[in-house]
Image (cartoon, rainbow, N blue to C red; front, side):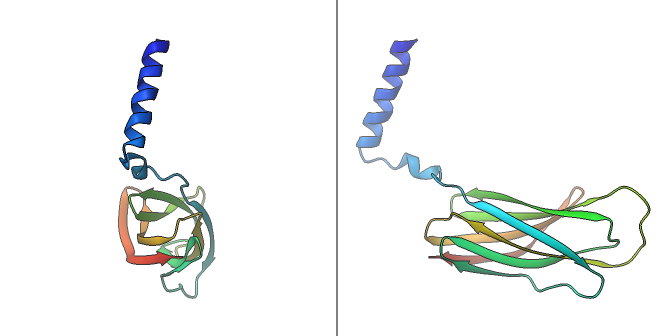
Length: 139
């Protein structure tokens, strides 16, 4: 067993020193998502995204038919693509039927400088829709 592990380690070391970029497929420092949301019955905010130093900042609004939803964000990254999914999960109990704007803002930090395909996906239940997609440059 030890001999197999040593052989594998040696093969990996030889492959890496031969100039192959296989490690580039796996980001060394994945980004970190910071996300917050508030509710309004008056208005939603426009979906926007901007690049910053080591980060992408974004804001938007997800409309629901009642205020009885918890809104959260999650992050997925792969090969130059950064996807933020904004999910609305219903809460228990009685709730008034009133259009509610779940306004959110956030930041994906810890990104290396470069250009990324950035997407925001809204999801509720088993439905998901890409609501924003653009190339963003991070400095």
